[in-house]
Amino acid sequence: MQHWQHSSYEPYLPLTEKSNPITRDIDRASPKEIVELLQKCDAEIFERTSQGNPMYQTLNSSSVVQTIVDVSKRVEVILKDPEDSLIVLSGCGTSGRVAFLLATSLNRWLASHHQKQIYSYIIAGGDKALLTSQETPEDDPLLGALTLGKACAGKKHVLFVGISCGLSAPFVAGQLDFCLRNLEIFTPVLLGFNPVDMARTEPIQDCSFHFKEVAERMNEMQKQQKAYVLNPAVGPEAISGSSRMKGGSATKIILETILLAGHEAAYCKKAVTFNGILHSLNMFEKVHQITYSQTKELAALVQKAAISLRTKGHVYYLGWQTLGIIGIIDASECIPTFGAGFEDIRGFVSNGFSEMNNKEGDLSSLGPHFIVDHKDFVDSILPNLSDNDTVIFLYSENDDLNEVSVLANNVRQHTSNLHAIAHELKGLSDPERTRSQFMTVLTIRWPSSLYKHSPVLMKQYWELSTKWCLNAISTGAHVLIGKVYMNYMIDLRVTNSKLYRRAIHILQRFTGSTQAQCETALLRAIYDVEELSDEMSSTDVTQHTLVANKRGSVVPITLVMLQSRCTIAEAKSYLDAYSVIRDAVAACQRLL
Ligand code: F6P
Image (cartoon, rainbow, N blue to C red; front, side, top):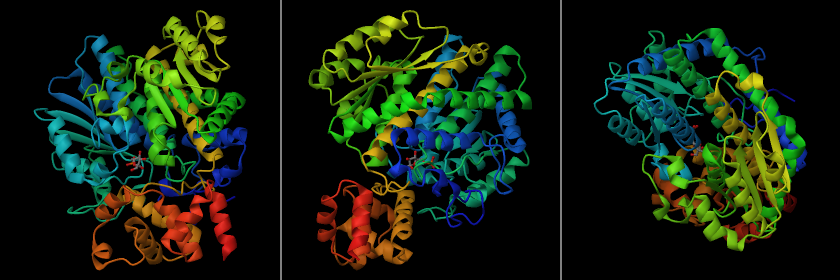
């Protein structure tokens, strides 16, 4: 099997869009094999060698560790002099959600220690995007810059971290450009997982720069320590391009390492050192090993979730504190990633929006997608719950186990298909009574070596561990019900320019047609016409994506059209006959 680091491996794609050789046949794997493949993929985050390809630096490369040290010291400076200062974390989709989680958690920590809250987060599309996918603002660099300018009004020192896993989001490029033009106030940091050479070069509408140009300017400024680029290679995603998985996890690992090192330096007089940072990264690797040591138990949950989805049931995550937020995030990402219905997998957190502590407050009046409190689950979902549904509790020994028991008891009146993922340190205070209420409990036991010096870190470890478990459950379940072809999510929603390009690439990859042929066929499916009008052909990508947003299955329809040279109506009826994408594609190939 060829390693993705070889220069000849899918050379036309940036690393974050390449397909991972490890998961090439994930769509044929058993639940246990799926978990093992994901484990291997996630282990690449911590890979130490660059397989002889100097283009890639990894998380443990000295240049990356040194940049983490430098940025941590900037955090320390801001924490020591918080007046008129701000640390802003910003991104689109999952990157913005991770930014939100970290900024709110650390502000809470600062408040509890009577310190000024200096963190702020920005997510493209605003707080609505924490729970639903808002892909269009991702393409807007001006909106990014304006939002940043507003968030930092009146501040004299701002450490800005722009997260774009693919070094691709115009929203983030606009923000970095804004920082680079105001270096007397801003110290910009670019966080992503492609080498700068692979940053996106596609022109941005009404804009004089593209992402790569901004990334190169950042690189230049790094020489004077006025900007920083943190872009280790963590390998392609298990499902091609799905940066909610490794991208999100690696973002969390790197930012937590930086911010907590800065906190320890500012408040515990523990200087930021190269070895200290290396040690922190090693600890996260242990979190990976401990989490995935429960392959069998995790695979059983993947299987349960798949059965529920296959039988038109649902999967519900009921979590406490930030573990509940991790559940909400994982669930909401299934809609754009797998074309899932919003009812398919849902997350709820104890105390709802007051636990989330997001900038725009309670969003529940916006509609059913924004109902997140356990109380809402009890009122609106519980009465209709059945054994078809899988319910997974997410808690740790820091949570009110009595509350966990009461809710578990309540749920058990409606379904026996009740499970838990529980994090345990010294032993939960009444484990047996709590455990006996669940059909299965995946207990993750944390050794004292990991938590002895920092209870804050323990919470971050539990969050990451829960993220890995839930990513495995939701991804594995959708793989098992046939939503993925090889390791490509074919039925992707074409809702912004990045996804438009990804769709065309996937079509080329599977049909062997030229880029022009694929684009024309895709546009026919988007506009639902056999012949494109001149206006349709000449309009810009943004307009195409706005129309595509209203249509379902445009990529599978295009694939069948290209494969069998049929009409749109024929392609649609053909697809209706198959629920498993691989079957549809295989049958389609047999036609030729
Ligand atoms: O637009 C879709 C999406 O791919 C999300 O799934 C992802 O989280 C977001 O874009 C951000 O991507 P990036 O971090 O590469 O900018």
